[in-house]
Image 1 (cartoon, rainbow, N blue to C red):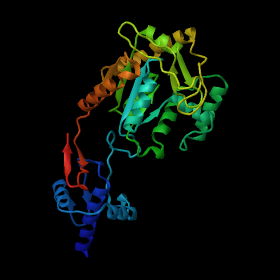
Image 2 (spheres, one colour):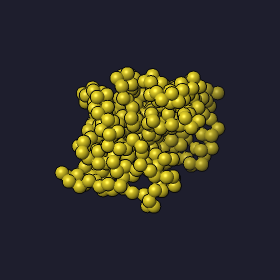
Image 3 (cartoon, rainbow, N blue to C red):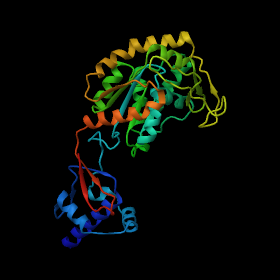
Image 4 (cartoon, rainbow, N blue to C red):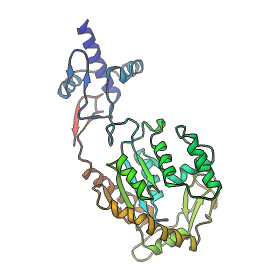
Length: 338
């Protein structure tokens, strides 16, 4: 009977590996059965000598959960909670620098989830709060906005925490934080909870920021931004980006308008507030190992260059060993990737 049980678990492991081709498996991956411990070389040897169909592996996978054999699936950035994201990328940048646009493109390319405190608060006000957000927090946010007060530091942190740990995010490859942190307490929370976060600072000359914000147009439904102005001097070549049909969002069909706070006095005030409140936080992040700066002199057309630098910095500051399942021939080998 013990031999039969051992063979069953061994067969199931092989089929499970096929099912999870392209899945990263931690270096300390192990399968503990009542009979013996299987090492990485043993697993590799078994897979090299075994062939099985994808259909069979899918059928068997649906019949059993990985929990039943104690298989610990990987997390890239944290080791203590399955609900924590694999990567946290924190975007800094003055208003109008383009961090929201770059964050949106990056989220799409990397299968990350972009999170902004402003977006989360708007969702709460529309009755679309995250399912795991406590009702008392929702009521406090609604009360603060109704009274014209800013949502306080602690509430914003709780909202972000709930969003990051929502069960629906379990399969997310990572998160991008846009507009958070904005206070020392928020930065301390990020550093404590996610110590391997990548910090990105985008910057432009103040004149470029002001011109860009004066020309910015925003969809009132989905928040997508456009710009009716271009800037071509002093080494900058930033083209206008307008919707195909004037005043109509290309993404959702909503109205594209000039925001009330995109006027010169409000813009100057927001830049001053950023310099006063956020720049001190940025100085703390400069000394962190995972930090990069980028000046998008061509606007969105510098995105590819940005990604190239980002990946180099990420690789340089993420010295890990992972096992990857090869997809060349239904999981023929386990490849060690540095």
